[in-house]
Image 1 (spheres, rainbow, N blue to C red):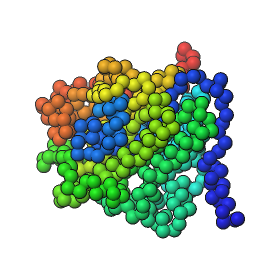
Image 2: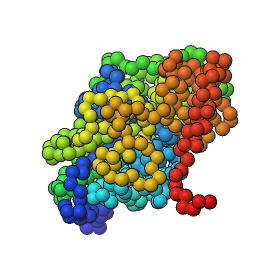
Image 3: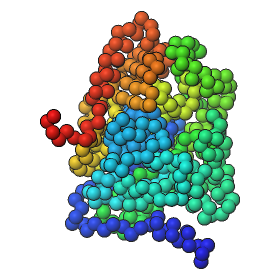
Image 4: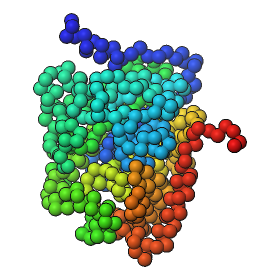
Amino acid sequence: MLRLLPFFLLAAAAFPQAEYFPPENIREGLPNIVLITGDHLRWDHIAANGTPEMITPNIDELVRQGTTFTAAFTVGVACTPNRASLMTGRYPSSHGLISNGIMMPDAEVTLTHVLRDAGYYTGQMGKLHFMPHKDRDHREPYKPYGFHQMRLSDEPGCYDDAYGRWLWAQGKQVREDARVTMPGERARMEYYAFEGEDRTTHASWAATETITFLEDTHSRQPERPFFVHTGFYAPHPPLNPPQSALDQYAGRPLPPRRYSADELDLLPPNFARGMRNMGLLETPEAVWDDYRRHFYAMVTHLDENVGRIMQTVKDLGLWDETIWVITSDHGDYLGDHNITSKSDRPYDGAMRIPLIFAGPGIPKGVATAELAEIIDVMPTLLGLAEIDLPKGNQGISLDPLMRGGEGRRSVYMEGRRNKILRSKKATYAIYDNGEEILFDLEKDPHQLRNIAQSSEGADLLQQMRKALLLKTIEIRDPLPEQIRPY
């Protein structure tokens, strides 16, 4: 009995008694909400977004049945800032999580808090990343942040978190087959086929936990709306897709890499030095191709598990009552500019993310290139559910854009040492050492020719400098509210 006790306690914690809301206390007509996030997932990793080389049939179905934003952007430069902004509708300088390694403040009001107060039953499955990874016992409880149920795993197999314990429960070999190296110990380009069964990948586990939440919630309180966030770790490196997904890219054409031989020569010296120091300039094209096939296979495996969640909602008879959102915390350069991963470099590969809405009240088959930000997800969802925004929210509803309206004039991203402003016409970045970068997107859509130091960019540079200054004033934190006239 003593050996079974930890798993018994784990099961009790994973499936708590649902907080009871009588039907008369829940407003009729509230939609269910499924929010799905990838990690390192770019806007152009979705086949229906214009990249036919990708294999994403399930997300493609959501694109066809809803609205896709092909010019949606992050507001921070790493996982935690953008995840916090997604869930609070606030910029990093407002909620304080300007980089990874910072804990979400207790005072921040999340989307989950608002939905729970409106009567939703809420669940978090997979990656959330509101707390630092390092120097934390991942077996210990996580702060709830408005979630009724949480099965958390912020990494894909290196910690004894909910995923690690689930693997252990099935045997030592199952656990070892899924183990990955610790953050900070990984190679720059680490890729291999997953050694275990497909059902035991981190993506499969996150989908399975989501399915369990959906089935359990619907059976116990079928009249109550639910909100669930499925945080997939994929396609974040280390790249370890199952062989079944990898085989689908054997001999398949790959999207082109975007780079030029002289682009580093046009960049400021310290900025260019940082890119050279990544040590990837001499990487053979065959290695890039192999690496990218593993990355794309991770995306396809993610898509397969999105499909499992979609099928469950259909099987429960809830499809017409459920809003879907697909997005990501950020993208990945993935060989563009001869670099990988993400950082505070002002390239679309890392900053531009998928954003797809589908479900009741959302126009079908719409694709818009109007500018949107990750902080706009919260006000859009609350608007669709006719729930008031909390004070301090800095996003805008994207509902008018779905119907042909105009989006933001520019999108804004901030890190510890830089600010970035991107309009439809240009990308501008300035760093704390004074180095500036400017891309004219009308002439240089792949961001290969920095013109910040050239005469041809002088007028555009002044325009973007002023626009960034005005944007910095605009996004100042509205909290705390001014309560005195002096």
